[in-house]
Image 1 (cartoon, rainbow, N blue to C red):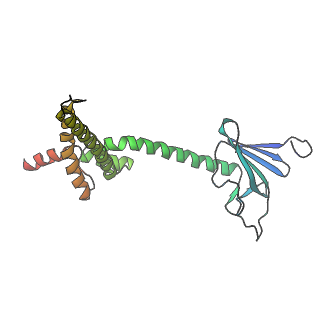
Image 2: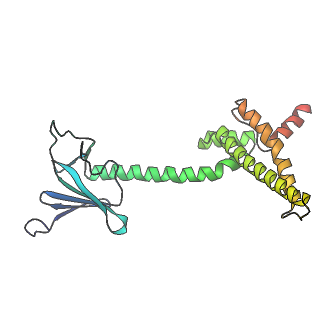
Length: 220
């Protein structure tokens, strides 16, 4: 309620709800807005309906909505403004677009972390086509696949070493040693060769064991 018990004037801009209580303004939004924080100096200057406002309190409401309480404010030489923002439908539309883009980039980033090593083991021509179509760099994908190969080789070698030490002192191996040895032997040559190609600044490094087929083709 306002100062005289009057209900607030309510505006809706997209998902936001704005409540005007005379000289007090409350904005509820599902988006935590950048630079909209309580400051003791260089307050964020928010323009709304031709007046300047600054944030005096913030909090979290129902459904994780963030609310901002603002009061009228006019910057002065002794109290200059910091970031400025004209709040209204255009700002909310722009902010929601930016927020959607950020969410999309985060999702793509997570997917890339999962997909990059798989792309990295593909052949040169396949990586070339993927880079041309989706802008996923062949070098970055190869580097990710080499990282995974390095982890596999290190894990296999560590398990093989521990298992062998256990058998030396007369105990049965705690796990099958054959797959550990096979894993280390299969991964190591490819890791070393493709790492060398990466260090030679090849734009499209070979895929998993593709260097073997390259050599056979060159000999024939």
